[in-house]
Image (cartoon, one colour):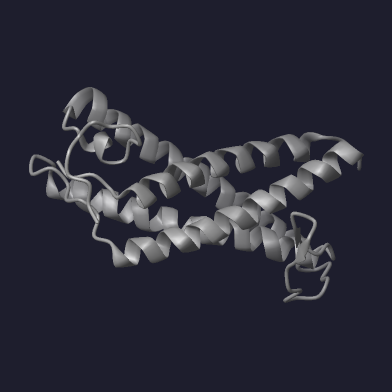
Length: 183
């Protein structure tokens, strides 16, 4: 079975770890009462991680558009292939929608985003108290949707490992000994 290319594998796992970390940090920071230095620091880290996910997702999408992914195993039913393709498409959409909704939520709150405290991102909308709760809710629910899709993705991968035993997970593992790395 062919494998994904090394850049695709690295981007997959790096983005996965960043999404999990950013999601977890978002839950932790919003549970901190009041406005403390720790909470402000976590908000900055959360924003920086979100911008990084957005940048890496753009890089990953560009890589994906120029590279053909390895084929699914011949033993995999066609409906599962369509479901996997649809799930991956939704994951890509949310890898962009979640950080963008957070960015616009921050701007609507009147808080500019300064990447790593050094690079101010453009202010595309002015502070808007009426839009702030709408964008906050959108960001929250997009995150919940992303978390649900990541869970489905992980469960599907585990199904292939534990039930199907078709080696499909080896296509994306960074240290797999399977042959046939794709372009």
